[in-house]
Length: 304
Image (cartoon, rainbow, N blue to C red):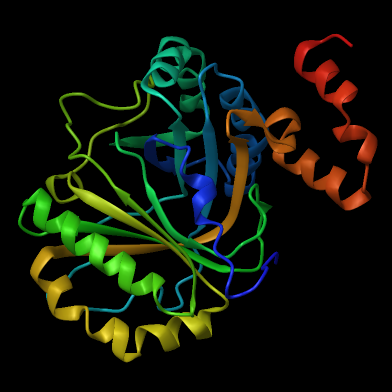
């Protein structure tokens, strides 16, 4: 775990992601989880990383087996029905022109989704996402960094976009004000339109029920599950419950088993260039030659 101190906040480094998407992913039912995870990390990941225009690409893998009170039960707020996921993906851009360049070339990427995904849904974040606090010193995590990370998906009760955004922003700000919070990142997505399925990947389901058309995602990290549970029981979080009941109809949380960064600031990470597990091997063995400029150029461009 790479934590600098409770007084250090690295949130500003995410400001370059001006336009973002958050995509939920569900693996094909008969693809074993290990096969799915390895393919997503080491085959699909490097392919996506090379699409022109891309400025930011992060895979968050979810653990279906971890259910340690990830989010409190709140009266009147129900879990989304039949909502099981294997991950959440951020694909972001510095400019609209970059996004257009990516969109023009992305068919080569989306043709690959049918190999491992049963369903993917890309929620648009045309104004980007907001990182309120991030105490992890590593800008390009590649695996389980030891933090207790969760993604909480929350559905709007009223359909009032302004009221829902206000509630979610206030909630994120309150959580980030507590010393227990190691990371708070808010994804306030546009309402999803089933008539315009996204991403346009053939052979993959892209539809959602009405209760999942208007959602927000809270990306949270704590030092441990104990710290998380103690935070939920504290006065600060408890003071938010009445507002949550008024604006939130559904809530489902997912435990993050690993976070994998392939592109940051339009630059390939070692995982983006080589694959996630290969990058971990290079890190473990201290293979400095494998990250030198000449090796990176050879592998990226096929020439020295």
